[in-house]
Length: 342
Image (cartoon, rainbow, N blue to C red; front, side, top):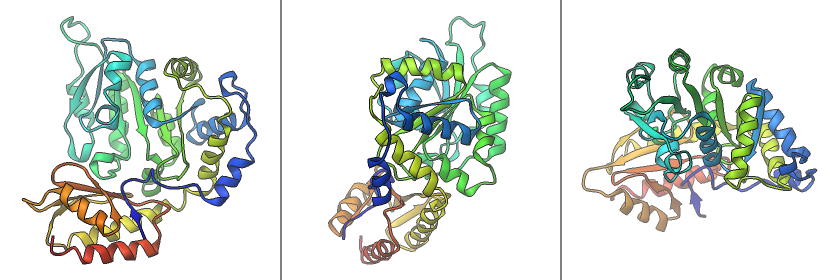
């Protein structure tokens, strides 16, 4: 049995999801004539209480489109230094949109309203770029699936409005956040100018993200998607999987969170583990003891049938997902139990 905890992107469509894909009605989405994509865009926008949506191949594309619409070349975007938007998107912000970045520190990858306020450049200072956008990531991948305090998001939003900044959320795992908070999706829709929602992570669809915003924002975003090469034809087969995920895979997310907490508790007892970050959702990050390279541990675990990812020289990430069964959880604990001598 090979157990893959490298990411929640490794899942396969279930037979029921595949059936929904096979039965999808499709058309040419560049002509805005694919009925299943249109349905997904409306369904997602309605869920968040926003005006419109745009289906794209990836969350990287939805994030990059948002930056391009919200900014002009030479502007500056405020975000955490470990944000996916900056850290894991190939320098796309700078290459695609020509923007500068103001990279903030913050516990577990999260920023505060006070930090944002303190790093907005004076608009009358010609020596510095214009601050025009602030972006947050929820849940925060590099922070171990950390969930923002919604009150802090509200405060950041107040700062953004005060200074006329666009406010974007990379919600790649927003449904994981919603599963553990008292908020609902419309709370976020009221707060942000744009939201990127991914279906190929915790929800288990094979491909796709939707960018949400106002009708005017999405009109502009559709043009940028074309420029970025993201216009697709009969992509309703992919959208059908995302619709199925929304209808069937939201309530089960807490199962992934439970399993991540079980793993965290077990890892904290191992002598080669130095620290386990708090687990809020389905992402688990832990640090190896000094002198023990994370990459070496990852290789040894892989040879035992457990795949995970070294996040840096001393950190390892595991991500639970819908293909990670209770049987696999028990097998994972067995493999870890036999790893005490690392």
